[in-house]
Image (cartoon, rainbow, N blue to C red; front, top):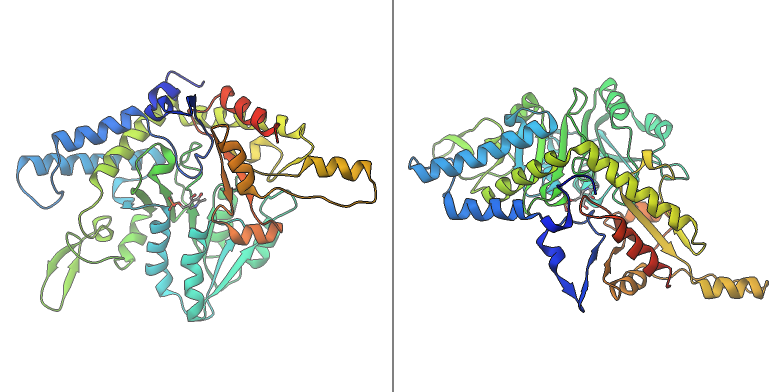
Length: 416
Ligand SMILES: Cc1ncc(COP(=O)(O)O)c(C=O)c1O
């Protein structure tokens, strides 16, 4: 394991036994488990400082506001941004919808948005919505190994392309996209550049750069609680944007038919915010910083290469995405062929029966052995169509996984 942090002992859920046996959690791409330090921070907030923020003058409210705003500063520092460039949302999905309903609304008929064929639905549907107004949605394609086809992306980057929005790391293929290069292409073209960083900020060192206009990610995918997400935006862009939701606390002044909005980021945080979520996310960041993001990435590379090596030796297993662990994160989508039919095919050379197990059957089989993997489309149906697949099983790793989890996964899989 990578350091004294990141150990299973810090994560109370791993004390859980199912049918008398420990669980092997391999679904951190969907959501991560939470260390005690995060759970304690949330309880401490409720036991010691709970009050509504930004609206009262008494001491407890001051304390709650300070905790909320300190959390914002901590999130900002983690990605190299100023705290006033950090908008708290519910999750990546809400961050991207915020952009669709603000900058997206300023697009005109004939304008274009460029995304890729490997996007999660939350970086597709908010943009697809705008097609109803005559805005064109383009998809950059992939090569045979699941890398982004940069030449295809260049050819689809038109003068009318106003927005380029790309996932940093695919939640299915694991592909890590060359985000700096894409950002430069977008900026040279005069396009707004948005990064879906739901699978990168939690898993590797990440610093905002000049080319990055907006970055979206979720707290629950990086040891934090559910219901807290982040939208980073360059301050001058946030200033120019209209609000997303309207209501309490996001205004400076309200008359009967007129309102003056607060400055960013509060302009985008209408109503009572998720203070416990922000505090929990900040504790999660402290925890990750103690491990070090370089080591988080190194650890995931180690587990991934160990797993891929084992899968390479299983002739009835196909996995997807780049072969080189330098080009991919700790997420492995795979399918399993019915080996008995394969055997029959070999024995009986003319019979072509080659059945791929349904991914839910694989996940159910593994579940019987307490190995928890995701199955299905992984909220990336256009990618599944591109790959001509009806789904995959998917194993994914995080800081608390170790050799023992890889071994349990591989030995359970080899029983199929
Ligand atoms: C690449 C990517 N983008 C966006 C999302 C959506 O995240 P959330 O459900 O937290 O909004 C996910 C979730 O799996 C993801 O993997």
